Image (cartoon, rainbow, N blue to C red; front, side, top):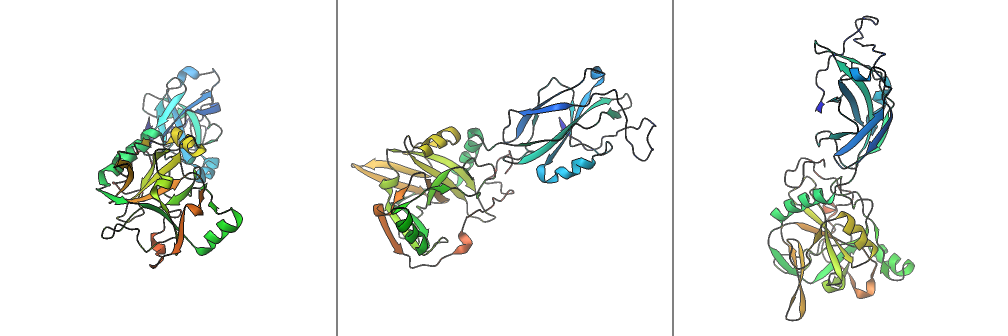
Length: 353
C-alpha cells in the first residue's frame, strides 16, 4: 500500500472532458465497511461487494482523513487523487504506516474499487459511505521504546527522602473541609505524548521528588503553588507498591520529563497499569529506586530528567506536613496540559506523537 501522488482517472467520454471522471457502473461499490484490529498506527478494513464484475477489480482506493477534515469527503470527485492505493488483496486488509496514522486520533475512511487499464489509467467505482473510527493508545511495546529512549538520558542517581506536592492554600483547605483530610486521585490531564494510555484515563495524585544538586533537598521554587505537602518517601513507595513507566516527553525546551506511576499492590490503579504500562523493577531501574541498606529503605532519583510521579490511591495529609515555600511560583515551568514537541528526536518514536 502506497500514498497516492499522481493517479490518473480516465474518462469514458460520457462526461465532459474537463471533469476527468470515469463512469464505470460495472465495478461494485464497497458497502458495509468494517474496521477491526485497531492499534495506534494500524487497522484492518473489510467490506462487502456485489459479485458483478468483481473479477475486474485490480486495486482499492482508500481515502483516509482526520475527522476534522471529513467535510471534504462530501464533495469528493473521482478525479481527486486518493491518499492510499492498494492492490486488490483478500479482505480484511491491513492499513499500516506511522507517516499517515497517529495514535488516539479520529479518522474518516471511504473506499472505491478500481480497475487498472493497460495504459496505466484507472477506472473506478463510486465512493463508499464514510466510516468513522479512532486509533488506539500506545501499546506496551511502544511505551517500552519510549522507556528505552528515556533511559539513555536519565543520568546518574541522586538520593532523596521525600515526595512533595505543591498547590495553593485553598486546595489544602478544601481537602481538609470536604474530603476528610485526604487528597483524592483525579484523572490525569492530556499533557505529554498524544498516544499515552494514561492521559484522560488514569486517576492519581501528582508528586515530585527532584532535589537540588547542592543541598539534596527539594527546590524552593514551584510552578504549582506556594504551599507544599511533604511526605516521607517510604509512605508512598515501598515493597507493597508497584512501579510503572508512563511517559517520556518535552515541551519545546531542553528539559525532558518522565512520568512514573506508583500503585499499591492489588489496587484498582495497579490493575489499570498492569494491563497498559511497562512495569519497572523498584530496586533496579534508571529513574526511581527503593533499596534496603542496613535495614533501612534508601531512595534515589534520576538527575537528568524531571520526574513526575503519579500515586494512584488517596493520601491523607496526616502522613506528612503542609508548609509555605520560601521561593517563587514559576508558572512557566507548569506542565498542565502541555503539548509534546513532535519534532524532538530524543523523546519521539516512529508511531506518531
